[in-house]
Length: 219
Image 1: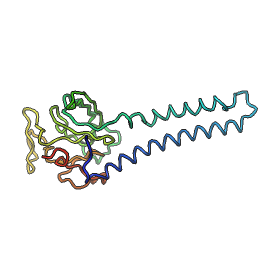
Image 2 (image 1 turned 90 degrees about the vertical axis):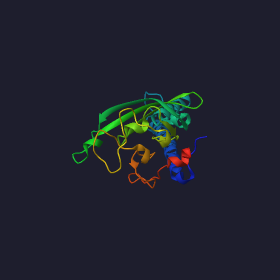
Image 3 (image 1 turned 45 degrees about the vertical axis):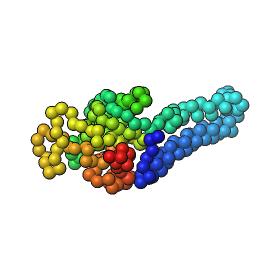
């Protein structure tokens, strides 16, 4: 079973809070429609429009529940499951961020939309879609082995099974030139906001703990 390490208990609390928030929003959404129906009945007693009583009231509330069920993506709370597997297909596309200001580096003014197809150990194919915040192209390269946790946007890759594509080299820590790329094997990914850090301390962007791949893959 795929579980978060004990040292990352704050991530589990984060997931539970977000799930509870969705159910709370669904409850408030339904309560709003119910109160609106009661208000309508009180102020339109003699209107030609039928009052929302009896079966009409229940249909009104049921419709609100169904709309809210999909509006707040409640089905994903039941369908989203943790899993692990090997990336068999990785698709990347760029879209520029409208929120990027003049002081933002050009390297971070785009969104790196990522679509992964993962084959689990039991042979099933799973699909993940998310937006990378920092462009580590080869962190989710085909052939890499990842572990995804339900409720967390960014899966964690196994560094020991991560290789650069042909004609590429990892950049040395002291080198910043040449046709090479940054080494994701030595970086730690925040599973909440998608930022990378050189040490597995805490994310400076969102404050959550970073998952150490050694706690997941034992290497």
